[in-house]
Length: 217
Ligand code: E4P
Image (cartoon, rainbow, N blue to C red):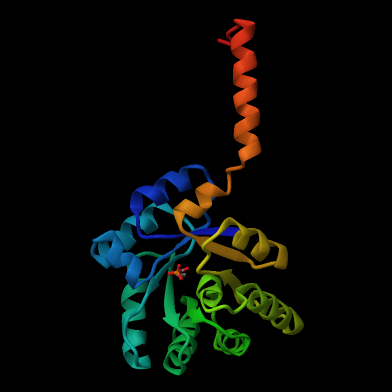
């Protein structure tokens, strides 16, 4: 499973990237707002840190303007993935921009039929939003499973990018189902390493080690 980090926080991205566990980055207009940075500047910095796909989202609502914005964003760096919303206009822009050879991440996907359309329009990634479905008492994981089945039935090459990941259990479940990628905030990625029995075990080892009176170096 590929790990993308869902943030526009350059320091957090650099720290995770150094560990070698980050395969890409996703941003959106809300994350750009949170960063307090200029979209072009911050996206360029992110693209220089991470080799893999970096999603940058258009904000236009009609296809011709989305295409224009997408082309502009793609000029930032070769690893830009143009992020388009899953609307009819977004699908038109997806078809046009993917035909030009750009990587496309179709975002705000909440149904299997939407995912089917995105794959047919040439999306490189489809982003089903797990957490936002869970927020309204629907099952985000059921959607990931449905898309996995449908894409496998027809050999679509569009990668399933499990998005809106809020918990470590979301990561486990998405991996179990076979999502190709997951994108999560840095805090959730850090939590993947935590376990109370690891802390407890380490504490006991440290106490016993102290009693030996030894040093390794
Ligand atoms: C993905 O590309 C989105 O940026 C993100 O996962 C949305 O997550 P949220 O629902 O927690 O805002």
